Amino acid sequence: DIQMTQSPSSLSASVGDRVTITCRASQGISNYLAWYQQKPGKVPKLLIYAASTLQSGVPSRFSGSGSGTDFTLTISSLQPGDVATYYCQRYNSAPFTFGPGTKVDI
Amino acid sequence: EVQLVESGGGLVQPGGSLKLSCAASGFTFSGSAMHWVRQASGKGLEWVGRVRSKANSYATAYAASVKGRFTISRDDSKSTAYLQMNSLKTEDTAVYYCTRLLSGLDVWGQGTTVTVSS
Image: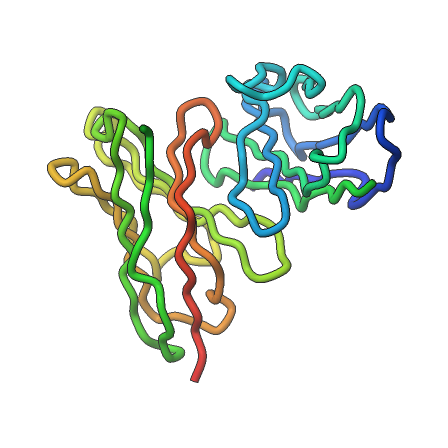
């Protein structure tokens, strides 16, 4: 099975900082990659699909890039409400594996 | 309003069974692939399995950790998906989410808690 890894596992940044999270697949998955945000105690929320397409209603400070095996999620200007754990997930074929998550603090 | 509502969680002994339900509304359930995702307390998201639509032969797929013990099904006439869990283990303790795959998992239920303990 294809494994998903994320780095870093956690980070702390300041309001207004540019934050980048990396996700890597052990084999190529084309652009079948989604990013989710999960705030403490809340249900996960889809941020980005197809590696770079912003889900409706998601602020434009979030962006995604990559294809094949290497992907990034970028928050251009970190806001207090962005404190959350971020997960990548492949959805090209089963099993639809999630990455281990990246916890973002301020 | 697009909505998924899970039910059926609870406390069960190791080796026992439980069946979760996921009632959908506000979208064309019959054309949607439905997935189950779980999250143990303080841990990350774990994909459990999925059932595809009738057009895709109701094909199912499962994570290795639950294969042979869990079964996902659906009743399109009731707009409901199910997760039958047998031979439950303590490590199956988690919040179980029902979710829809469109491009990414775009709609999630609020989750239902399953606790496996003696």
